[in-house]
Every structure is written in structure tokens, then in C-alpha cells.
Length: 218
Length: 232
Length: 39
Image 1 (cartoon, chains in turn green, brown, purple):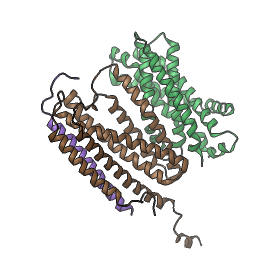
Image 2 (cartoon, rainbow over the protein chains, first blue to last red; image 1 turned 30 degrees about the vertical axis):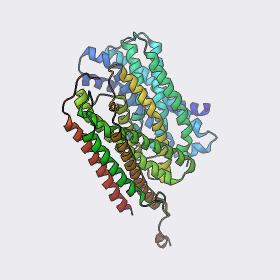
Image 3 (cartoon, rainbow over the protein chains, first blue to last red; image 1 turned 45 degrees about the vertical axis):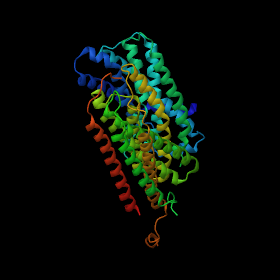
Image 4 (cartoon, chains in turn brown, red, green; image 1 turned 90 degrees about the horizontal axis):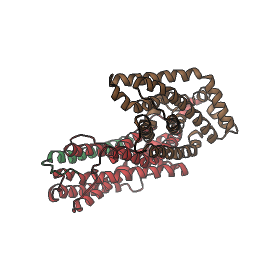
């Protein structure tokens, strides 16, 4: 599996221009959200967490849909399976790479959020934890669905259509936790939301890994 | 014999039975049952809302088991049943959202009050509609069956997670009675309607599975013999 | 729970029952139509 991961990172590094483009897309989305609300500093700060995660979610469709692009281009999906790399290793390699990409994107969008919505925080470690868990939660099923939709028609629409309802818990928990971190958490509720994120990740990283070989078998 | 056609007349009998039960149950619920203490006449909506809710979960649960069985046995009759159950489940989920909104407006003054059960139903509705869309855009029947079965399993497992997360999310704002409470002592219309909807649901799934099986049969047969003339 | 008594509301009750009946009937009809088409 380490080989799969290493291959993924090489691939990501070669296409790093794409990562910049996705960041610009995410930042633009955050900008548009503020236009939708208006120059109301209080309201913007109140909903900053929501905007951040919506922006991240929308950007994730761009990242995720590219996951199997290289394989599809070179018809390598079948080829990859002939190698000793098991489908499960392939899945986890891709999913981890996607998660890391989304985490980096999330971290990059935080300063945008701080500037646009006046939504800063000093609890950086906790924020990082939430971003990591949320990104991982999006990535696990997202990578699985990406494998399916890259081989189907209307792939651009299908991926978000399938993914968005599924990750509602991730969105809710990440937004709530982030919001508590930014706005203050007198009753210490962020822990509960983080537990929910942990549970979701635990369930879906195992379940999707289990089901992935059925998705790519022929 | 084609799969899912072992009892050709059964779904029609179930439909008739279902309609009968619903007519009886609705009559009792509308005209005989007393109005509820707090909610008044509006509470009568529960006599049709609760049975729909029970059967909606039943339909999606059947879809889940059909998906699992299909992945293990690769028997396409289960793929047909899963497709049928998903479609019927979406139908009921849609009805639930409508009934819930019609109940909420006079009760809470808004069409949607983010009740955890109804919000979960709405998420379910979109999740499974997405799976039907997936089926529409995949041409290979084997891939279609496997992928939508996988997606069904993933979506179904999500249901309790969605429910709990929405409940936590909502509990911080308001504490209110869920629309699914039936505090009346008069359970007969509820039971009758529950059976009525159950019979209808079963009949719908059987007929819809029949349609899916016939479509699959035409997809899975080899090309017709007259092509051989072209190849010669 | 609201402490009040919701007066009236029959319109909503009929709406709920009627819409449910309509949607179920339309679906049943669609099943018959599709079944015939696929025969």
C-alpha cells in the first residue's frame, strides 16, 4: 500500500497546478457567500464555519472527480488491477491522498475565512483536528463514488448527487464544531461533534474499503 | 418463467386488500376517532403519516437486504427487487415530506420545522434518488447492479448517523413534539392504515420488480439471430 | 408541546389525505402503464 500511496503523491505533485486552481475556486466560493449575505459583519462571523465547509465541500467535487482521471485516460484501471496492488490498497492510497489534498485545501481556506468573515480563532490544534476529520469523512465515500462515476455517463453531475446527501453528518458535525471553535464553546460541546466525526470516519473508511473491490472488478 | 412472476395475481389481490384497509382505516380516522386534545383535527393526519413512515423504512430496509443478497448471489432478480424497493421508498419519502409539511404549517406556522425524522427522510429521499440516477447513467447491467447495490448499502448505513446528527443539531435550538406522536387511545385506524399501506407497498414493489426483471431480461439476452446474416 | 388548541384545520387534513391518495393512485397507474409497455 505504501507504493500505491507514493505513486499517488507523485501524481498529485505533478498536477499541483490543479491544486492551486481548486484553491482559487474555493476562495471564490467563500467570496460569493459573503456577497450573498451582505456586508453584515456579525452575520458573516456567525455563519463563517458554514461557509468554510460549504466552500470545501464544493471544491471537493473538483478534487474527487480527478481521482481516477489518470487511470481512465490510459485505461489503466484494468491495468492497475493486474499488478500485485490489491484493489483495497488502491482505494486506501487514493482515499488518503484525497483526504490530504482536502486537508491542505481546508487549511489554505482558513486565512480566507479569517479575513472575509472576521472569524479567527486561537484554538488552532482543535481546528486542525476538525478539518482533518471532516476532510477524511468527505474523502472516504467520495473516492469510492469517484471510481464509479468516472466510468459512467454524466459523471460531473453524478458525483455530487451521490455524495452530498451521504455526508450530511460530516457537514453538520464539522460546521458545528468549527463554529464552536470560532464563536466560543462554553459548554464544551465540540467534543461530541468530534466524536461523531470519528464514528463516521471509522465506519466509512472500513465499509468503503470493503466494498471497493466490487466496484472495480470486471 | 421470468423471475419475480411466480405469483402473477398476488399483487392485484394485495392492491385490492390494501385499498380496502385504507378506506376503512381512513374512514375511522377521519370521522369516528375523536379530535386530539392539543392538536385538534390536524392530528388526524397522523393516521396516514405514521403508517407511511413505517412502510417507508420497511421499503428501504428491503432494498438494503436485496442489495446485500445481490452482491453475494449475483442473481438479478434481487437487483430488480432492489430497484423496485428504492423507487417505492422514494415515493413514500416524498409523501412523508408532503404530509409532514401539511402537518407542520397549522401546528408550527412554518412548512418545515427541521424535525429530525422528517429531515432524515428528506436526506434519504435525495440519497436514493441519486442512486436511481446512477442506475440511469450506467449502461452495463452488471456494473449497474453492483454499483447501485454498493451505493444502497452505503446510503442505508448512513441513515441512523444522519438521524442522530440532525437530532443533536436540532436539539440545541428547539424542543418540540415530533409529528409522529399519536397520543390518541384510538389505535384501530392506525393499525388498519398501517396494514393498508403495507399491502400497497408490497404490491407496488412486486409489480415494479416485475417491470425491472422484464427490462433486464431483454438486456441480458444475446443479440438476435438475424445479426448473423449481417456478419456473414 | 403547544398549550393551545388548534382550531379548525380540516382543510389541512383533507389536503394530506387527498394528496396521499392522489400520489399513490398516479403511481399505481404508472406501474400498470409501464408493465403493459414492457410486456
